[in-house]
Length: 334
Image (cartoon, rainbow, N blue to C red; front, side):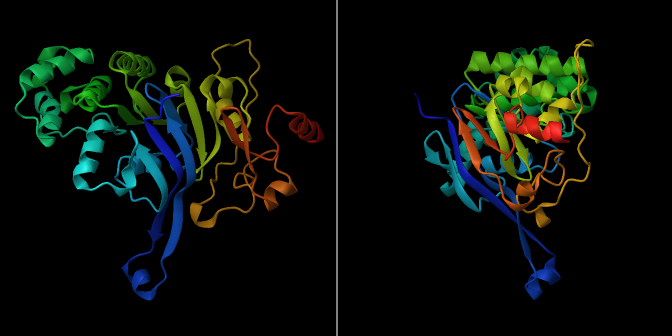
């Protein structure tokens, strides 16, 4: 088996909370935005991070791209330690692993036309000697936009068109990994499908790996080979995407899936409703951190953090996994 393109081990990201006065008084609180996650992404693989807002998905993505400082743990990209890179090496990493941001239109400078937006990565990375007009035409064709769009400005683009320009910018410099934060955010359902098909096509044509950050589980099922479910900065479940959709093992995963609209009207759809109040990472619950919202929580869950369960490529942290005899007994008792 070949070495993974990206390897993350026990990664922790810590934020200091408190203003200037608090710092002077020594009353600064440290909180973990990412609390010890580990995963690999293979070459040519699409890996998804899912979870509610505030779960730590975007913080993790920004850390991988060097936009957020690492407190502890390791990030290796193509065999190199990204946590010890200097400025020049980090710039090269961002060329090889660019990030696509959420807002398709807002992430594009309103003062630049599409030609300038697509030529910008070449200038930033010292490649202005290339035929930039030819590169712009190549990129527009690659993402399915007419070449005359080069003269348009972001406000003249639809959300889907702006996202395609963002994709073109991301693949401009022959990257190895695309980090896409909510790639379908703000788009109509039909346009979402077009963007996902484009990303799948580019992955296959260009041999890309992808890290998709999203709360939209329809996105995950259409594009991801493996999925990690994140809650309060930790992974609660990780495994092959189809296996997770077919038989979710963690109650949080099952709740997220049950909130999805069911396209089959004849299929029974049992909704698992979660309390809307998500605990703060500044006051993490004891034991299993999900127990304050879990419909199946027991005294054991409130007292003790669940151990990591590993079954082949599937990982889970839960005392009473779904679809097991122990869980069935709890459901009958309730």
